[in-house]
Each structure stands twice: as C-alpha cells, then as structure tokens.
Image 1 (cartoon, rainbow, N blue to C red):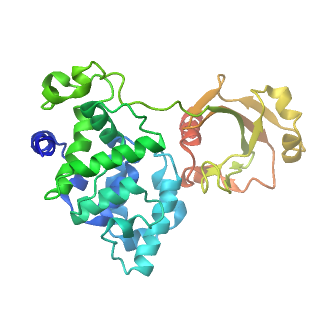
Image 2 (cartoon, rainbow, N blue to C red; image 1 turned 180 degrees about the vertical axis):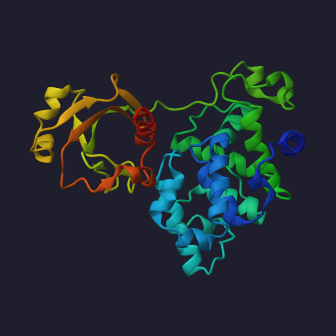
Image 3 (cartoon, one colour; image 1 turned 90 degrees about the vertical axis):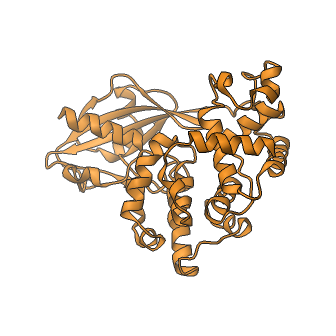
Length: 347
C-alpha cells in the first residue's frame, strides 16, 4: 500500500496536463491509448486534438472514409492501428449503438485492443481495478523490485502482470495506473532516471544493488531485414503521375505509393532501365534523374528500407491519371510524404 500511495501522491504533484486525463469518455480514452502505442506523447497530442475535433463521437469516426482517416494518421506510423480503429468504431456505432463496453473481458474482444489497452480503458473510463503493464510500468517494477526476468519473454510477461495485479490500489485504480505510467515516463526514465529526487529511492532494489542501467532486461531483438526500394516518380508533359494503393497485409496497407521496383541491393540507372518492370511501364523514351543522391534509410521495427526516388519524365503514359496538383490529398507513408515535401519545394 505504501508503494501505491507514494506513487499516487507523486502523480498528483507532478502529472502532465494532458486532455485525455480530463475525461471519463471511453471513446476519447480509447483514441488516446491507440495513438500513444509506439508513439511519444509530444507527437501523439496533436493527432489526438485533430481527431477529436474532426470526429467528436464514435459515430463520426465510424462514418468517415478509411482513406480520410489514413491521411489524417499520416506520420504516426503503424497504420494498422488506424484501420483497426475505424473497424472498431463502426462495430461500436452499428452493433453496440455507440455504447463502449465497460469491462476488461468485453473491451479486449474489440479489434486492435490488447491486454494493456483493455486494462487502461477499463480503469480510466470505468474505474475498474485492472492493472496496466506498458513499457513504463515494466521499467518501474523491474527496477524497484529488482526483477531480472526478461520483460519480452513469455515468463516475464506473466510475472510482471501478476506483480502489477498485487500492487494496484483497488479504491483508486485509475489514479494508480496513471501514476505508475507517468512515474516511468518522467521520473524513472530509460536513460538518466532521476534517482536523486525519487520518493522510492530508499527501498529501490536496483538502486541499492547498482542495477539501474541493467534493468529492465530484454531478450535479444529479431534480426533487422534490409530491403531496397526504388520508387518511380512519373511526371508527364501534361503534369500527371501514377499513385496506386498498397494492397495485402504488408506494411502501409491502404496507403498510396509511386510505382515501386524492389531490388536485391542498391542499383544504378543502368540496372533500373534494364529491369523487366521498368521496360513494361515505360516502353517509350524517358528522361531519368535520381532525386536523392544518397540513399534514404527508412527504419521500421523489423526492417530498414534503403530507398531511392527516380524522377521519370515522359511525354505521355496511359497509366498516369493523377494530377500533380492533387498529389497531397492522398494518404501516403511518411517516407513518401517527406520526399514530396522536398520535391515540390524544389520545383
């Protein structure tokens, strides 16, 4: 009880002023939790404000076009979150008459919602005593109790969840959950935690045993895959280009891109024009220039995309149906959005 009381008292004095902490509306809390997955608060805040203004209710989000949602999500990454958000909004609006489920077991059945998010919504919106365990919580618990089990192992996930369940303040679960996450975010930080001013320092195992820098423990990451992307940025004499929607279950599903040739390694212009894909797309004469003189390396969680943008100028092309003046209305990956900013500003 002392642990939870100390955290809650610290939180009341140190918490950041964030809009989703001022509401019990499960729709707004759900939005914020989905946006803050894999995203820093400083970045997610502007998206949260933009979404709540455009879609003030779950019915508004449900009625929106998926392409519109993906365009507004552009820059947040992990676009499956946006697609799942839309799917679940339609389910809640159409099947549940806009009523958000109120228990952990009901909430976790919704698409795109895992154990952490279900626990967060249940406690923050409905004050249910369900302990949250996110990266911040793992860090606080592993350091304070000196737990050296890997947090990304199946054993560690069970151990930390069980520990978290024993610590939650059942009389004020929302405050406790917010407190321990906030404590991990701004006090018990990953690098250079503020141990000198920590209210838990006297009983922190890792501080006493000099394990702060070693905890929490993580198992070795998966090997990063390298991929080599060559985007063909078409520009016809009548100012048209080609954009197509990415299909399938791979990265960036539902977003738009220029024609793409994926190669085994970085290629030069001769390699490009001799490829079968290039010849099929451009049977007639073209002018080619490499926009980025140095490859752009775009890092995703399990793959690095080594990317080149080739500007292809040609007189006409039947597949080129999109006006360059409309290019910014399409939802695209941030990799392409950054290219467009540079290319259009250079023109």
